[in-house]
Length: 81
Image (cartoon, rainbow, N blue to C red; front, side):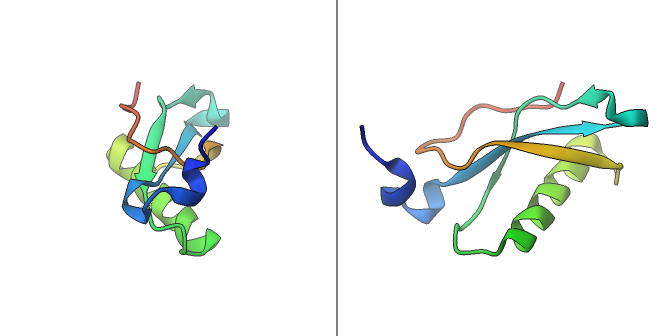
């Protein structure tokens, strides 16, 4: 099995997550992605994820998120539901 996390170029790395939002976080987005260089800090990754959530929801929204995968050799089609 190829370890694409170690061998993929930074430009090919994505983090995927679900975001939960709304009162008591009862709503869930679809699978979302954020592309980033894996040399960035965890704090910077969280800032990128927060920005992606705001972009998808169209406003700054209280939300929490769950990271479901750390990398992929190609983007997975993602959109909010």
